[in-house]
Image 1 (spheres, rainbow, N blue to C red):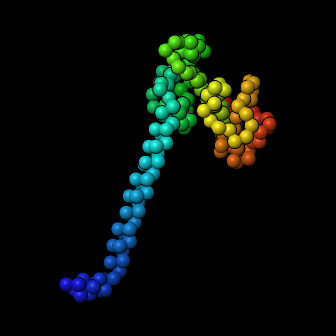
Image 2: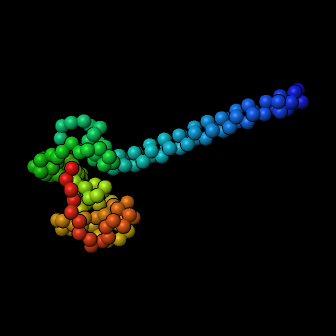
Length: 158
């Protein structure tokens, strides 16, 4: 029986090699897909886990979540400052962090918020802003060397 199998493999060598490559390729794609899915899921859970509730203007809840947590969608707009103050002063509210976006510098999005929002991050250099007009560079911008600590920049709306 083994002789027959080996003889069959030899006579159909190209088919055998192609079938083996196809099996290896499919297995590799399945493993990559599985690992990528797990990493994306872990990233979403760790990011979304920071937020109990997201409050924003009327519109698409998905767009609000994507623009507020992952900064990948156009923002819906803003809520009034009075609404923010009411949420902040509500005794049932533990923490409130306003987030506003819509401006950019080159390809980088500018995210407006309060210094307290950044306290959960560890800065590699510099400090958390304390005055209006100051900014903290994100990792990608700092790595790209587009801006350095102390540089001035002008954002563009839209």
